[in-house]
Amino acid sequence: MPKCSSCDSWFDWDEYNKGCPFCGSYYESDTGNYNFNNESRVIDRTSRYEVLKRQKWRCNFCNTMLKWDKNSNWEGETAHIDHIHPYTKRDSYINGVAKINELENLQALCPKCNLGKGKKEVN
Image (cartoon, rainbow, N blue to C red; front, side, top):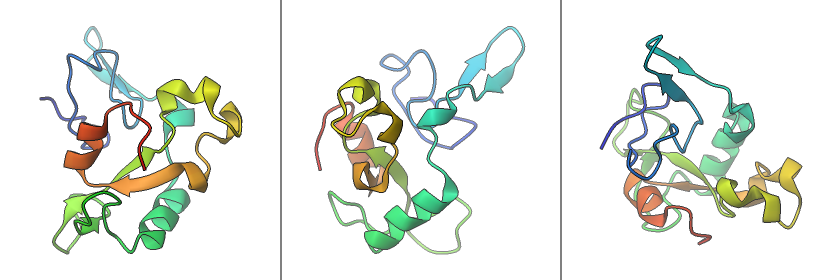
């Protein structure tokens, strides 16, 4: 299972062979560069913090302690900020495509729970 060089998330390459499902970056084998062309999928730092704070830095499914990133000075799993209504199904989001990244549609999950959830709508 490969790890994204951009956001440090693990993902199933067979399922997401077009790039990282968490940050939208993808690898160009001919140039050796990562591209970040899917900016609308990226959750900004303020929203990330608000989601983690709202959940008291715990996974919304299993209650595991979360941390900001792999360089954080405390114990815990690196947080994944997940779309409750999957980003891949954004065209059917009840509040409209433009609001797919609103706080009400975001939750913090540990990597294991997020990868287990996949593209399902579960909260």
